[in-house]
Length: 112
Image 1 (cartoon, rainbow, N blue to C red):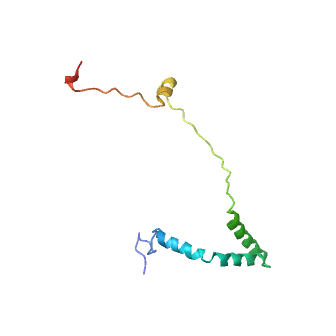
Image 2 (cartoon, rainbow, N blue to C red):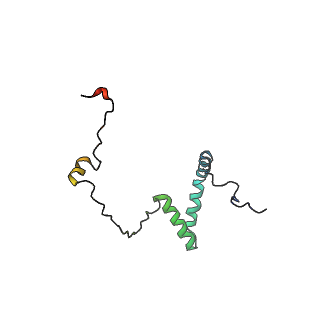
Image 3 (spheres, rainbow, N blue to C red):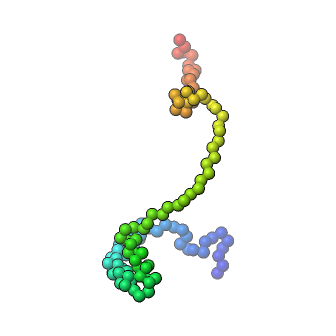
C-alpha cells in the first residue's frame, strides 16, 4: 500500500512520549541497574581489549560523568556604525530611551 503524498508513513507521528510511560520505563530500567553493573564489571576482565575498553568507558561515565566537550570556535564580528540619533550625554541621561512626548490635554474646560 503506497503512502499518500504529504502523509507520514509513521502511524505514531512525532508525538512526544507520555511522561507517565517515560517514568515507568525509567523505574523498570533502574530495577536492573545492579545486574547491569555486574555485567559491565565482568566485561572489564574480558580478553578482548575492545570489550574491556568499552566497559571501562561505561564505568567511568557512570562513576564520574561524561567528560565536558569543548569546541574551538573562530568568530568574525561585524559592527555597524549607526547614525547619531541623540547626543551621548542625552542618551546616557535617558538610558537610550527617547524623551517622553508631552501629553496634550484636549479638554477645553481645564485651560488655565
